[in-house]
Image (tube, rainbow, N blue to C red; front, side, top):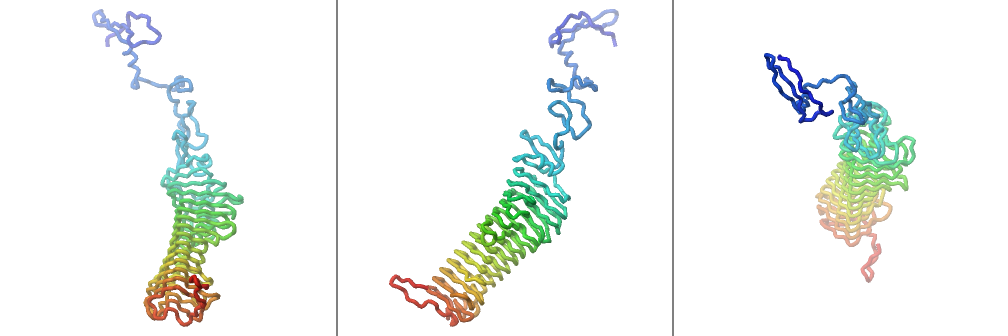
Length: 491
């Protein structure tokens, strides 16, 4: 290449401008030169990524006072470039993990364990799961009141044979969203999915579940529950729980405190029950808008002071509702009792071979059986007001030793058999009353009211249908007085 030389250099400003000219002379050969010039813009355009070479020099690194190059990478995946221009390890958490907490700008800090994430979180923050998790440790995760656990549809599986899965250490609200919680052990020792803090006195726990399912397979009854309280004065409020069990224990056994469960679904495919609240006055339990299904266990054990409203109780061979006050609810038991020792208001009961109302008082209720009894008083003189009681293949009301009283009821059996009586009661302490009822049988040889032994019953203003002998000879009329001038009768 021909030799090139700079010529006619003139002084320029400290910073070259795009319009500045730099004159050069190019050798044209034969001792002659050709004059040319280069602009400042041409010179500056020569600095590109293609012709830029960097070295291990920190002079032009970024800092808090100037723009610059990124510092040389430290070859350490646990560090990040922080706001001071240095590579640092996060105060807690890392740059990746199965759990994360987002700050106000949406930037995540990641953690390797759920416990580490919950410990770092503040009330109101959300701990998120980014993968399915399997935890084999026996140490329960200490939850933090006000911290939300967002599962993002993932499953948290706890495989330990001992210990609880989660512990609620303080009063407050604990919320789970879009999470599947699974406990795989079948014979746990002192285990529950959620537990109150051991040794703590009087905490009020509000458990909120949104699109969250708890699934476990406890086959032993000792400590085999969804919720287990170590102190009897703790209080639970449970909202939106979906839990499935295949165990012999009661899924939610709560004793001696105010408890509220609502909008929840419980299913026990084993031999255990669904919900149980023991009766310790003045404490009581309230359960609303819930669906509980059991195989052979009791769906709802309410005790005398507890209440169930707008609930459904289903049991294949167990009791649907035991004790307590039940409002606006539906119950079914295939072979056992639907309502047992309860007071039912505006409820519906269905059974195949069991009993709809067993030792139960009912107001404005409907009961239907196939071959079972609709009413079975047993050890109580139960009362039925404004009820519709129907059987397609059996006696509507039956007991050998006890009786019941019916007011403004419709009592109908379609059991077309000489033994298809509407009501059949035996000896009892006290007298029966049948006031203002409609009583119908399908077979003319059956009785509307039958005494299997000699009994006394006060019956007046009833409409009997279908029977040749409406009241059989074993029943003595207990009403002997006449109407007064206003048509009143004292019974």
